[in-house]
Structures are given as C-alpha cells and as structure tokens.
Length: 218
Length: 167
Image 1 (cartoon, each protein chain N blue to C red):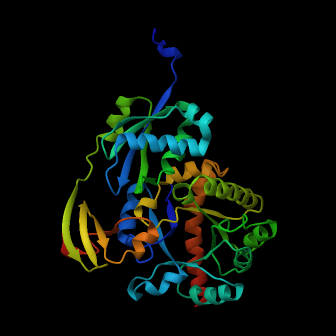
Image 2 (cartoon, one colour):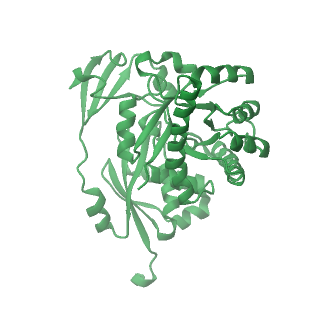
Image 3 (tube, rainbow over the protein chains, first blue to last red):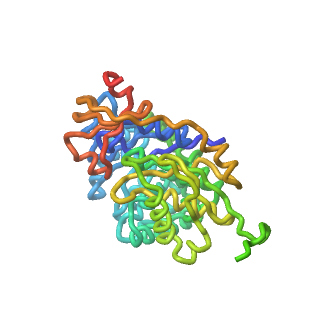
C-alpha cells in the first residue's frame, strides 16, 4: 500500500477551503497526507500562526526569483517555483535550493529542453505535473498542455529528473483520488509504477530533503 | 429482433462513483456531460469504443457502464469532469465490478452523510453566512467573494474544528 501525498494544494485564504477541510477530503479520497502550499504573492495574507508548509514562488525576473528563494528557504519546508517563463524555469533548475519546478509548460512553449532537464537532474529539482487543466480547461487549451506535458515527461525520463503529480487544488472539488490521477498520468505516458512513485515516494523524499535544506540554510 | 446470445454480447465493467457537488445534479445532465467530456478527450471513435452509459444514479452515488477494455479511459473521463452548467463538482470512482449486483453490494450500500441547510452568521475563519452542514463539513457564503471567485466555487469550505460555535 502506497502512502499517497499531494504537495501542491492551496488553502484558505488563497484557496476556498481551510487546511482541515482539505485534509478531510484528501483523506476520504485515499491520500495519506497533503502539504499546503501558497503562492508567494498570497503569503502575507496567511496568519503567522498557520503559515503554509510550502511556498510556490512567483517571480517576474531571475533576480527577483533568487531574492525570494533566499527569503523562503529559511521558512518553508518545500520551495517550489511557479513555472511558465523559460528564463524562470531555467533559473529554478539551476538553483539547488529549489525543490520543485511547478508546471513549466504554462507558458508559450513546453518550458523544458535538454539543458534545463540536465540542470534539474544535477541540482535535484523535481518537475511538478499539475493535472488540474484536465477539469479546468477546455478542449484546445487542454490538448496543448497535454502535448507539452508529454514532451516534458519524456525528457525527464531520459535525463532521470524526478517527477511529482499534484492536483493543484484550490478547493476540495479540485482534488482527485490517487487512482484517478494515475489514470490521467497514463495519458502522459507514465505507467502505473511510475505514477505511483510520482504520487508517493517522490513527494515524500522531496519533503524529507526540503526539511534538510531548510535546516542547512538556518 | 432476436436478442444476441450472451456469448456474443459485449463485455462490460461497472464503475461505482460518488459525486461531490455544490448544487444537486440530474442524471440526464451527468450522462450528457460524461458523453461531452469523452468526446472532447477521445473523439467520436473513442466514444463509440467506450460505449459508456450511466446505469444508476441517486443524486450522490451511481454506476456507470463501459466496455471492459476501456476502464482506464472511463476513469480519465470521470476525473476530467469539473463542472456541469456552472455548477462545480467532482466525480470520484469508488470501485470497479463485473456485474451490477456485485457493484451495488460492494460499493453503493454505504450510508452517505446527509446534508442539511442551516442559516448562521459566522466571522471565523471568514465573515459570511454558513448555509450547509454535512457531517463535519460546513459551507459558507462569504461576504468578500474574491477567494471563491479565484477558486471558481460558490462556498468557503470549513470543518467544525475551524468554528466550534456552529456545532
């Protein structure tokens, strides 16, 4: 039995559900735990007593990204980067303080090439596959993102980059059961065991590594 | 017309599912949405191979039938449904079975928690009106709609642990 984990869930006040409500929903779906992540733009809205465990850094420039990584590495278990822009994707993969590069395909192109993939492998940066576009996007957008993600997955497989699967949920209605995420991962050319790793072993190891990086930085 | 003998008929699998929704859904709307999503993902040829049909639906749980070879494809279709007529929902598969009888016995005889409407003003964790309670889950219509608009939902979801005064 795998311990499934989702490390890309957005809770209130960024998302619509409190962490407890999301936990309740995730547990009933078959997840053993979830990790609440907030975009850096909403970080200040969280009360100090309940700061999220992970951050997804949104940066406009590479300089801004480095600054934010340095700030959030001390306070967050998982530091992920909101991908999309090619320069940001590359800078995130270059930095060994980053744990995950989330959805690099949300820009004009697929966002990853062989150089970026090699850098990600070298610096232990995992690639986050957000599958929320399956139920949030319409036909054309969905097929475009699916094609980009397929390309990224094949590159990651070739260069041994770690993959994680998340639902990128903003409410309990965005959460999907692990078996459903595995079925969706099948469309990305991931077989059952690879999807299992991306949903359980990989996020758990990233959480462990993230804690170590945080302590080292402190 | 003489019916096909059992050995010549298509083999089916029955997938039991549970629906998590904001407003109640009709079986007909669900059937239409499944067909629309299947067509969007796999095209006309794919839909004809899937041969999908909602066999039973009671408002929260149901059974959907598909060709035995295309169960993963139907899982993908059900996971990809996020909205019916601007009503957000999530279809969760409970299990798969070879017969309707076994599927009902195994997966559909679990008692669901009943939803009841309430009307209570709350300020924690957000100002608004608590309108629904289902087990430990409470739905709030917030005064400030920014968060719900961002998440594309109607309610802020909390639990009784978040606001114990509502018990």
